[in-house]
Image 1 (cartoon, rainbow, N blue to C red):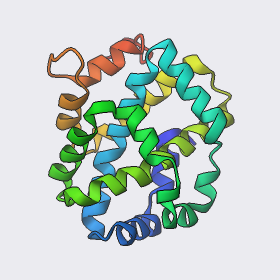
Image 2 (cartoon, helix red, strand yellow):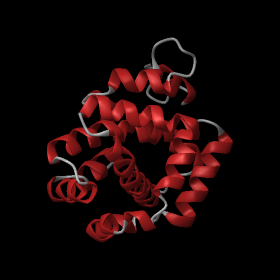
Image 3 (tube, helix red, strand yellow):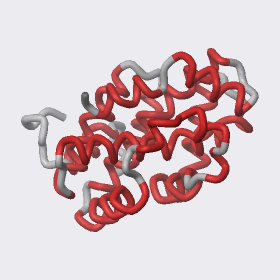
Image 4 (cartoon, rainbow, N blue to C red):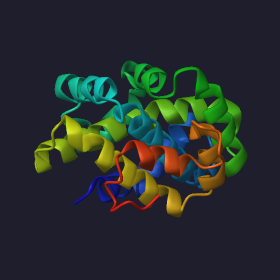
Length: 194
């Protein structure tokens, strides 16, 4: 099971319903916002892990805090998400761009801005847990993270309502496409496709 499958399995029916209740939002808007937010989080992690330093830092966080066990009791985690490290993860992933990411998710999903922050705070540790679980199952090293995350970003973004907005937010060289930036940094691991 790859990272994308793991996330989609974790964030299906009952979990989405619980998240929407926890943040006090409409379930459909929450579901759309999750589809918008996941490629953003994965894309941010892919961008960060494209440098050796960033990949080492991410692997260190996975080894320390994210063995995938969060996925075994999602209901328990979501009920106490404010005790988790979601805000810290988001700070590392997005830095100063977090408010732009939140606006993008809100605009594309119709989810109220005040609900997007809590949603991302819930999603970030789930993504890290899925990443940790995948890393352990497949025995991935530091050098494999960028490729895994870049591929998952592409998979998630292809069906996401935010693929264009994602590009604007993550576009490093301002050429209008983030995917080439993410993919370019990954050294063409997809056979040179951009």
